Image 1 (spheres, helix red, strand yellow):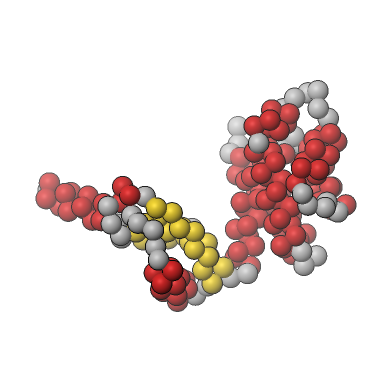
Image 2 (cartoon, helix red, strand yellow):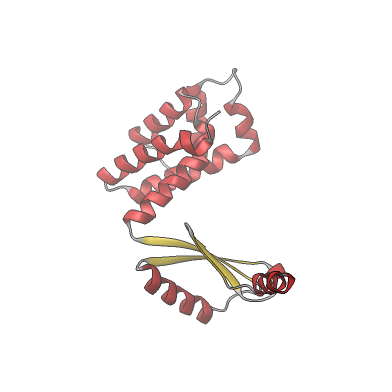
Amino acid sequence: MAEKVTIARPYARAAFGFAQEQKALAKWSELLGNASAVVADERVARLLTSPAVTPAQLVELIGESTGVALDENGKNFLKTLAHNRRLGLLPEIAAMYEILRADVENIADVQITSAVALSDAQRERLSAALSKRMKREVRLHCEVDPALLGGAVVRSGDLVIDGSLKAGLERLASELAH
């Protein structure tokens, strides 16, 4: 069976192309984000594969649960997914859509994992340095992992900068072993 991402890609591109054409990128981000949260719910996920629930019923359930007023285009997109039994791919579609949107808007989402919580000043310095290096506006997503011992790991797309104490100690141990 094909990877979920491979199957989701054309749907994400279609939604993005339409949203861009309509100048409604934020609206579609909200729609896809909320709809993906609905289908990720365990109770709804079970209904996605139930032969007793029609595609129209699934679209209605998702539409009512998103908290976003669906226009005809949003409903049609969900209907297409439902008809093709692809509603379960909404989380992947939403994630790909956001990558496409960030690229067009020249924004880089950067995941920072640090040993301790970063202060506001540290976040600002990191954001400024990464913006300069990546030549993009940077959106930081920070998390704490005490297992790093010290330092941080920076991830954005294919870029990984591992400045953690844990990685440094592992490199040192590897060098000493040889």
